[in-house]
Image (tube, rainbow, N blue to C red; front, side):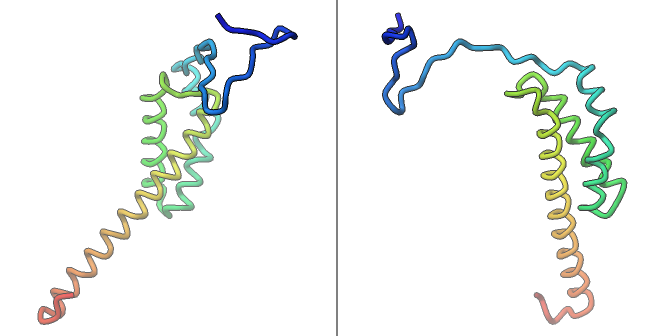
Length: 123
C-alpha cells in the first residue's frame, strides 16, 4: 500500500528509485491512420529526399521504405502521435545511408578505373 502525506499526495521516493505508474495503453496506429498520414504528408518527405539524394526514384524508394518501417512498427511505437516525426527521422536516416552507399560505390569504381588505367600503381 502506498503511503501519503498530510495532503493525501503520495510521499516522495528517494532519487533513483523508480516510480510505479499505472500503465496506460497507448492507442495503436490503424491502417486508416497510416493511409491518412501518407495522403497528407508523403510529398514533404519525398521533397526532402530529392534534395538530399538528387534523384527522384531514389527519393521515392527511401520514403517508401520509411512508410513500410512505420507500418511494421505501428503497434510498438511509444507515442503514436509522433508517427510523423518517426517518419521524417526514418527518411533522413535512409537518405544518409543511400548517400554513404553511393560514396562507397563511387570510391570503388574510381579504384577499379585506376587499376585498369595504371596497373603498376595499386592504390
